[in-house]
Image (cartoon, rainbow, N blue to C red; front, side):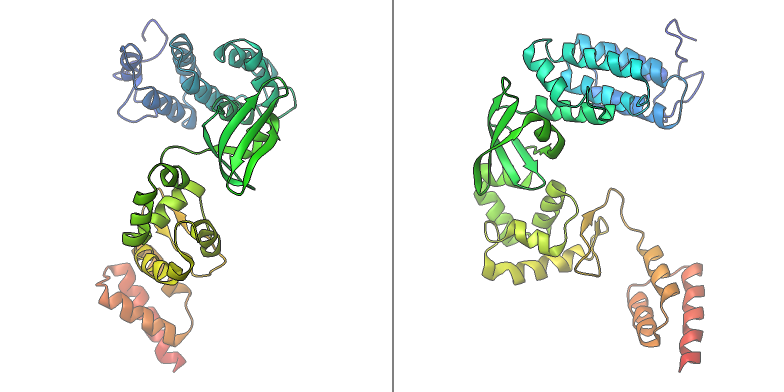
Length: 328
């Protein structure tokens, strides 16, 4: 055991795989540690219920706070809060930690008050809201579930209100409490931010790479039905008369993209995946559940053209062929 009470990587393998406690301590001691990787390491410890998770989190919290890495410190507190949601003492301590992280002045206390720390809101949600409100400054980009994409015009800490220019609703006012609850930050890779900064580039993407534009839109807004997707893109990015050709081209490519869930029903949303689809498993499941002989034959022909093989699939083929023969 080390002096910190954390086992070295030679003594144990932590939840973070090949990265053990020795790596954690070495990285923490560097002049410019990779804080994102350190937070991921702590997350892995928590997820595996490792007994050293909290001690590592405390070490990292102290480092981030002393280094003035406010956003990362708040993110780590949010991660820790998920494990201490019912701990009133931890909540009280975190509340003051957040005030100090934000500078300790009036603005810091307004953010804490408006984030719900004193209103019974879950602690991890309070921290998410505090991160959101901290990022609200004139010129910041954001997204609202009702009003869409917007640019912050003014933040009034005296009256705890925010003024935002949304598309189609300039100068919209909302309380900071509501802003923290409903707004989401829009980063530099958000579709509308890219459109503001590089309209020609987005127009070119719409003309030359429809599927990629849809992926960017899904990345920015989350899962979307085809109808909602059209509402976002038409007519500002894709002209009304060009939508059919645009969507036909995008759909053809996206249906073959293993990282996109493309729904069969129009009312279901498209969504991006973090892991590729298992096409063999999908074909298996579809064949197993199909009872229409004509559809079964179509699926078998499709699988044969695609060169699908494997003992499991062959067994399913035989079973479904027998079903077709009996049905006819």
